[in-house]
Length: 243
Image (cartoon, rainbow, N blue to C red; front, side):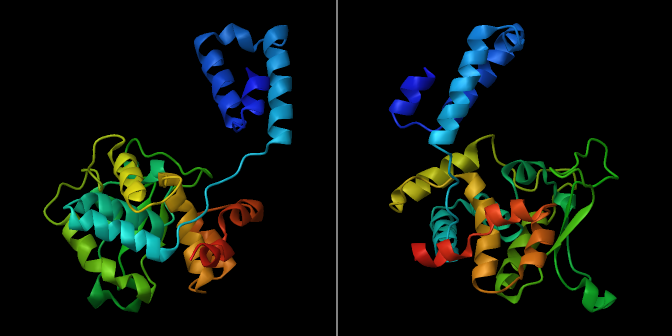
């Protein structure tokens, strides 16, 4: 299977998924003495070395806006908000799903300049069942402080208005946003169709390309610990290339 997958031009992730599925169904296959699995792992290492994987390129802001506008034109308001929030706040797909209405804190204009923007609080420690971030951090605050994104403020107010604090911020059935995003992308002629994780890639690249944030600010906002992780996601030059 590993040899055939490599010769067919598939990515190494196909073999990784196969081994993960086998290990889940038959845990005993993961024992070091199992020669068949050992040989499969050796083949997979060679597959990945000869055909290294690649990440999807970030989407330019013009494309993100076009996707959101097409969603809005078809009455898919919540889906459009999911796309915009993911890009602007550099959210991973799992983080978007776990957000609740109380995660979005409105500005307090009378409290001074430091409180005049919408804030998204990630992984709140005070709420039972809160899950730490990918880097093991709780209570992360992301501020909607760039002028270019202030158009979103009225929509955020609408999104949380008269809703229970524990309700999902983006209240959609499982898999709905990914399906709609892929469908809209196909209709726009995007090949391959966009994925939710591309939204996480896109925000840092957009902000770096137009110099809205420097690399250190992007690293803090993206909540990356290492510079190597940041370099993997920061692809501002690809934005210009695609346009």
